[in-house]
Image (tube, rainbow, N blue to C red; front, side):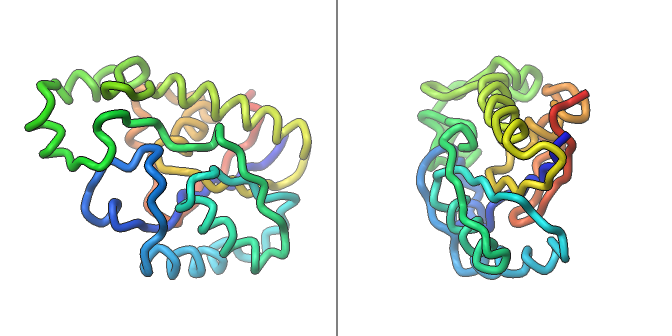
Length: 187
């Protein structure tokens, strides 16, 4: 088993204004940089074998800040990206409701298969995240690995590791610059 510390990146301007980020490459804002620095204190004296990160700048910046304290290189992996929100990226929830005739209750009722136009489903995110976790776990058995990613992406691994239904994935999205701990592979 590998112990993954799943970290959500620090805050961005789009987080603070409630915009769908998806895979749009938005950097950390000044609060996000401070959050990433503060996160190092939350990690305590844990000894990590490796740091993996999404290649999107907000996660990579968070990972780099942490890596400076842990003295470990960051390995980026495109599979650790956030869910692709397609045409919704850059829009607020009210803009999505106004621009698209979409029943968001349906989207929330079946998040595994529903998707924004041009986007990805939760099950697709879960599949690529678990494939990345399988590979990393094989490289670092019985070790601790820090994995810096995104809210929904992290929540999918948390659900899979704890045998929680993906219909509840939104319940487990952590706040910016916080972490969840899981054991992988799942039993």
